[in-house]
Image 1 (cartoon, helix red, strand yellow):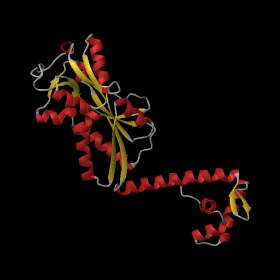
Image 2 (image 1 turned 60 degrees about the vertical axis):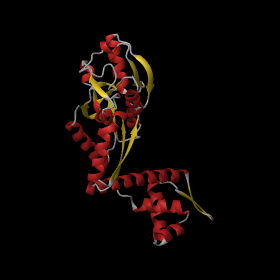
Image 3 (image 1 turned 180 degrees about the vertical axis):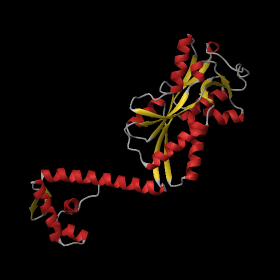
Image 4 (image 1 turned 90 degrees about the horizontal axis):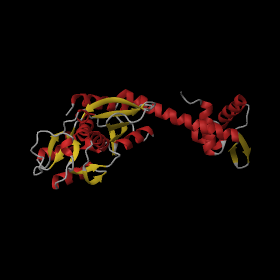
Amino acid sequence: MIESTAIRYFREVTERGSIKRAAESLRIAPSAISRQVQGLEDELSVKLFERGARGMNLTNAGHLLYRYAQESQAKLDRVRAQVEEFDSLQRGHVKLATVEGLLASFVSDFVVDLSRDYPGISIAVTTVGSRGVAEMVGRHEVDLGLVFGRAPRRDLIELARMRQSLCLMVAPHHAMAGKDHCTIKELAGLRVILPDPSFGIRQEIDRACAKANVELDLYSETNSIAFARTMAAKTGLGTFLPRNAAMPELVSGTLVAIPLRDKRLEATQVTLVQLAARNTTPSSLRVAELLVDRMKQQTD
């Protein structure tokens, strides 16, 4: 794991351009560096440098070894950082992608608590639809993802699930605002604003309506849950969200949540996912553990 002296000297000569300058940088005798480089060439049975009046230039074999040395050093730096994190967990950076519906209360509350309890762990939060979350996790762009529904890719593992039943959200003056619940059949012809098809919420609503042979009056679709909430609160449009996604409006009374009587929509879930083959850092491991605990504690 630890970089050998010969490789370290070889890297220094490559980056400095000569044995003399490498020796000055490392504060050792030029002869010591020369012996190590010569030993590498003897061991590999190749010339690593072309020695000329202008300094040391890498051969093709030398370029190959230098790329290896750079990659090895980068891996070693990552391992050192992880070991230091394991030792204290005082610092680290975690990237989380999430569906927007969780920002209003669940994710924001979680990040507030994380900043208080683990001030050295910073977190970057990106909001996209469920498909986008899965793609970002799959491309190693983020450490963890929160999707609506089950993990949509086979290369993702599910760390935890949290039930988030879908409700019809309408303004208090809406004709359906006084209902205790409603069935999918009762939604026929309802004028709505919906998340676009990249959102798991939209996929579930489309599936339920198709199964019940119900057609909604789609006035608008959007990639912003916040916009859908605002439009529902200020107009006669309805939208569909879990309670957590509209908590500020529900608390203020600008929206009313009407439970949907549909087995599948009552059982919809949010899932914490991670790439199965990902090399997990201590900080992302800790954040995942905290999210799992939080998701077990909360349900709608």
